[in-house]
Length: 232
Image 1 (cartoon, rainbow, N blue to C red):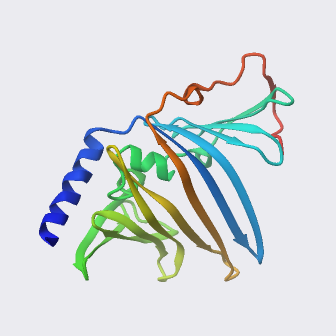
Image 2 (cartoon, rainbow, N blue to C red; image 1 turned 90 degrees about the vertical axis):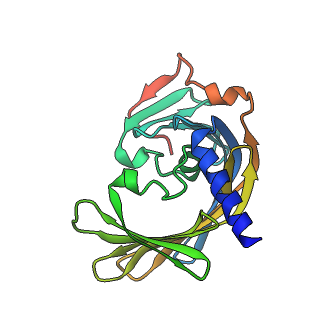
């Protein structure tokens, strides 16, 4: 039975990249804990397989955020009809969970496309444990540990040259949809130099697959007023 289950899981995962999901929409709750303070941000997202993503936030005011893997970013505020545009690497959504799973990069969470190479892979207690290292060694991350269960990632950690964990993320609450599996919960812990940490929990709900929602094609209105100051 276990062998049959493993084969089924492999076949399901093989089919995901072959039939890349075109559109996924979801409600998102992001809860951040830092220095004893908790902040919660809710949004709705519409993501396409080319990486274009539209996010709508309602607090502290309604605004639209448009991003893509190239780091192009637009923030549109309908109440003032202002739009802020910028392009930076940290605006890129190429490491976004929805984008990675939609484009068939769930097996390594995009590590090989981010400049890492597989150094080792072992099976242990029913889990597949992989270690990745930078293709070009340098300062910062020395290795990345990735753990998969039933061929789905459940844990990833970035580790420096001294063996300190810089960041670790747990993926859980997987749900299967047509041609795609998604982790509906992720918990990320980032450690700072002051031996403090930031905990970010992300929960996806109300997932919609390949709908004809017009929000997938949302564009900033042509009469929007450009601003060089990012609205806060």
